[in-house]
Length: 172
Image (cartoon, rainbow, N blue to C red):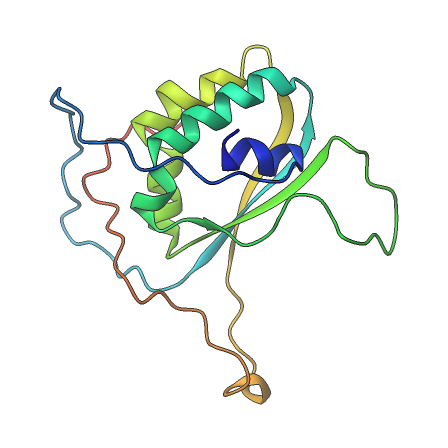
């Protein structure tokens, strides 16, 4: 079971699949942007909704893990999808809310518009939908002055370039 599938279904995740070896076929890459904006403002991609078809989500999660797309772009899960407590309202058992941190909006976009995600992975959970999900991206809030020195300000210590990730034309 892949990490993504486990997270979307709220199951205990197993170890993620290792990054695939370099493919033997040439991969078409998008040209690098003329002037890349700095990738130093972390963002959070929130995936929330209901899982309808567990079997198809297993195939989706497996393909997702094998692609290593998050690893290449610095994305990682910061929450598990099921709540540990509910203080108000009711949460259906098939509802997930998963948060992924990226080093910047450009990398979140590079993931979303990547050829591997849009053409290979995403179709595994669409037509008909294996779940009803909303995917949104939020900026990281600035650290309050009274918290400086008490928590680490959000930053990445490694560079995760988005240039070179094969892309599709973004949907409008």
